[in-house]
Length: 112
Length: 112
Image (cartoon, each protein chain N blue to C red):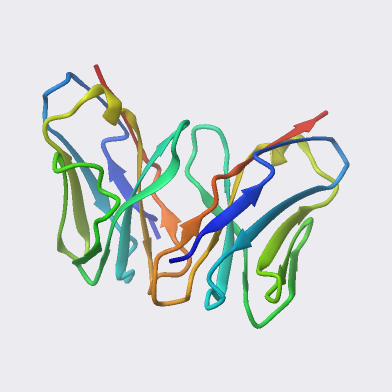
């Protein structure tokens, strides 16, 4: 089955800098990759997703890139703000077939 | 849309007692997932249902855990008897097919 690895486990950046979180997956059939943000004491919430038919997707300060050949995808946050501090989870699945497989999470701290 | 609803939001019980967690998925979603989240083990998928039918319960830690989905709008996760190591946050999530999952607010369980 699918296995999703996520790095780094913790990340600290200065406010205004960029943050990059990387994930790799094992199942070449996987075609749907969402990213979730979980603030302290809250539920995981979807922030952006990408399907295997595109290589990049942007939404304001966040973007996700996908390299199907290398089987990895990344989350990019630009101009980080303190409210970006949270745990971020990547996930992958074969759409409509199996549940999402989540990475272990990255704790992002944005230092003002 | 009210989103995924879980109850109770907090539960404190004594070891050996039965605990029942409840979930109402988003109307129209046909997949439902139960997760457990701890600092040590991260986000673990316990069981998921498609169209009210349990598909994979391999994540259920022991026979003390059971889950049901009697209809499309209600599911329960039961722990009997509960143990201190069951203390965690339990999330319910729902989706159409098995793609983007929308999480409920979670139930914070403490077993003394």
